[in-house]
Image 1 (cartoon, helix red, strand yellow):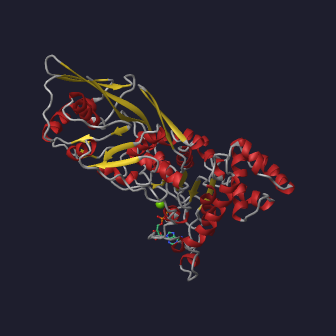
Image 2 (image 1 turned 90 degrees about the vertical axis):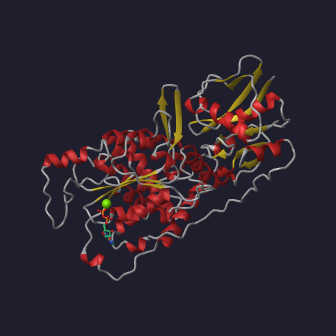
Length: 508
Ligand SMILES: Nc1ncnc2c1ncn2[C@@H]1O[C@H](COP(=O)(O)OP(=O)(O)O)[C@@H](O)[C@H]1O
Ligand SMILES: [Mg+2]
């Protein structure tokens, strides 16, 4: 007899239904799995056979054919172990189990334990969307499922426990739905009050955080660039529930949750400059999300920016514009979200002292040009805010003055984000950096003298078309920090200043 059990596969960050059809027939004993299985799925045979026997069941001596439908999509990983075992059990009619309107996913150990898998959260979301009543997942994955309502989620330890539930002899308790609390983290061990001076840079970072803008910091070694960037998470607004789910889905398929539940803090990723373009942007034989997707809704910090390979830097161009990356492979393509805030730090030249007030730069003009030209013009154009972080003066670093704390800055950032959130309700965007051309026209209203100021600077500073929209977006954020609906001349002039850092040569 043929039996059909529902399971779920993963493609990119999306899940799709997989029907595990099992047929037992008379003939020479055999066990075949068809329906585009990869190596891990084909190896399920051995795990299922052992788990079956070691759970006190006798494996049917029949010709077993398992089909994973739809047969035209490649199936990956070990998630089908559990539904295959249940399919054989149901088809052999050795035990009556109720699998109606239920979905199953889990890897088996040889002794019948159910092991952790990747991508459980998107599977649950898909099952809920399909109107499935209950889903059975490995107990080790339960942390990431705790906040999902609208579907019964059963955490399972082993086959014996699951069978007792399915034949009605001993029920498993479904997970209790936890309520999501917006958490403003306060337990950082770093703070902006530790950064002395650098008021202009701190102001630019506050604007970047308030509007979600990309930022590039340029300055000599030891001026505090890395220090400023590493403190950025301390002023970012808390994650909303939707953002937390979006982030957790990516971490779940990338196998980066490490048993932890929902991602509740904005991600801060800082890959080393030797990172490959695949690790940075995603891809590979079995595609995995890269650093830019792991930084979704958070920050991607690239320290020593020109040291990254030109290929890595350039592959970020499209995702920086679109907020997502499409990775192509032999059998179709997958798309990962990557709406992150890019923060870069770099020295102005190889020796680091170009433009330094007291030290002499030892680079030749050729070396200077080569260093800067490593970052292409189109890439620089995509970074909203360029800011100079000059060498710190003695009077600033030795000053007793207490700098503003992260908590004070964060208050203003959260307030500005709240304004944006309310203004853009229903448009599908949440922050100024996501503004589309039509929304810019609608929401970036300039006063007359602001328009004049922008017109004067446009030609003088060689601002590009993209640069123009960036200036408007940054000016919008500056006005939001002041709680002003209109964009005034002062806002525009400050915004232009962040696009016109040309003291290090024509490329910037
Ligand atoms: N503005 C500053 N205020 C306080 N300490 C600073 C400042 N700038 C640099 N430092 C000190 O110098 C160290 C190196 O700074 P870092 O941020 O790594 O410089 P950069 O990345 O610009 O080369 C910091 O760990 C800190 O101790
Ligand atoms: Mg540094």
